[in-house]
Length: 185
Image 1 (cartoon, rainbow, N blue to C red):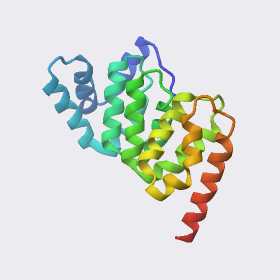
Image 2 (cartoon, one colour):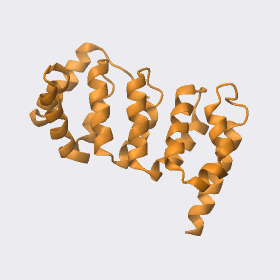
Image 3 (cartoon, one colour):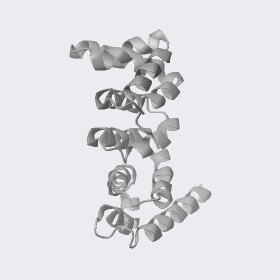
C-alpha cells in the first residue's frame, strides 16, 4: 500500500528527481498560474512511461494537491503498468484521487477488469471505496451482454449492506467466466 511520508522525506524525494522532472513537478503544486501548471502537466505526460516509476513514488507524499496532480499525469499516460497503483488508489482517503484512479483504469481499458476483480477477492479488509470504484469501472468496461451476465456481481459490489455476503462468490464466478471466454479466443 502507498504510505504517505513526512515533509522531510517529501523534500528528499523531490531533490532526487532529475531537473527535467523536478522543475515541472514543482510547478504543479507551487505555481498559481493555471496555464503554467497545465503546460507542466503536458510536459510530464509527453515523457510517458519512462517516468512512471518516479511518479508512482511521488504518490507517497502527504501533499494532496501534488498527489492529485501526479495521479492525473499517471492517468493521462495511461499505461497498464499503472494498474496496481490505480487499484491501490481506489482506497485513498481523498475522493478526487479515488476518482482519478477509477478513470485511469477505465482509460487503460479491458486489461483492468481481471486485476480489479482479483483485488476484491484479495482485499484483507472489506473496502467500500474499492468496491464502489470497481462498480464504476466494471460498469464502464463491461459490454452490454457482460453487464447483463454479471448483473448479480455489479449489484453485490455496489450494495453496502451486502458487502461480504455474496461478493466473493460473484467475483469468483465472473473471474471463471472471463477466463473461459479468453480460452475460447
